[in-house]
Image (cartoon, rainbow, N blue to C red; front, side):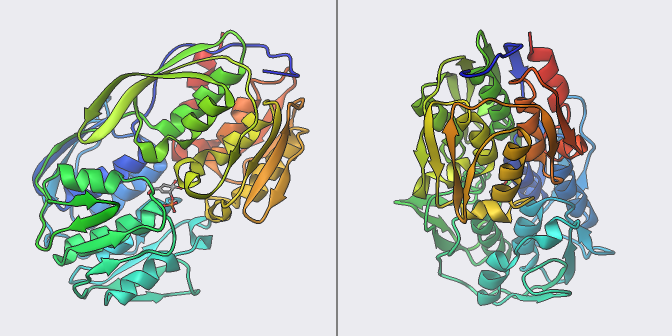
Length: 428
Ligand code: S3P
């Protein structure tokens, strides 16, 4: 770390909670598989619980996780979901809302989908418009483009999807709709995004293939009950990786982390900035690439990121802004307007967080620029009810000798319960 007196280093071995993105897919796909499945490493975060509770309300039997996050799911097959008694509450989870919207568009019953105040502010047209094109009947109950919405089944065979937004949630929603409708589909993305849904569909026997970027799901595809072992969450690991990269004397090993290329943007960006990061023991588990990540402190230089590199680092961009403040030179991120549509407007909330820490950042409509190195001061950071802002500010707290206070750290439990305790344990 430059320009700063760090109090600590990060040392030891960390096990991360199971991957949140993969966990949503594991629950949904095993719920509509033929036969029972076992999922291990299911994370305890609130977002994944939202998906689990919605599926339970649709009649799927899912056990409570044991200490290793092992749950059993009794798959109901493609036709077996039941009419829920009341509106399905997706809580704070955009992935639950978008993916379930696709799945429910192909059911014979109608459902209402809703979420918390933050999720009710996030756009739904990105899935609703293409699902309506497929023949789904979906009505916004209060406001255009927002939850709550009412979904009725009735999908038409659809040959080619070309989603306009580069979003794994949109892609997955359309794949789930086509799977549940039995129609199959072909899908071409504007820019590649994380492919967890495709990998899991292929692993569970759907016959899905990917050729030259074209995803092909055959008509009549079904899923078989499976054993799914979830890797540690790379997005959660990135907070520890960033802290270790910035704190002199650090040497940290994050074990058994998912290293899907669609999620590695932060790691590759840090490596390009000069970070000492190695991926060790590469393996494939249930179709997903997994490795241990070793990181040691090194001086960092600035980087520029835009275009097709953005989806692979989208969730880590607030953290990158903090890291950039400690690197030498001007880091610039563009083409990241999607940040404005996350749990908070993450261009605004990142800028406010940086200002609260005494750091200068230039904001654009589609990104930001940070000149480093700068001195981090203590201050009060408003988490804006956003788990990733609260975790980024927690990392900042270890980079300064002054006190960093954070409002509403409870939101961290959306993705990483126990994060602050783990960080404390690794700090020497
Ligand atoms: C996710 C995809 C990304 C990401 C979100 C999780 C997923 O959103 O930001 O945290 O699990 O599919 P978009 O698909 O909207 O980019």
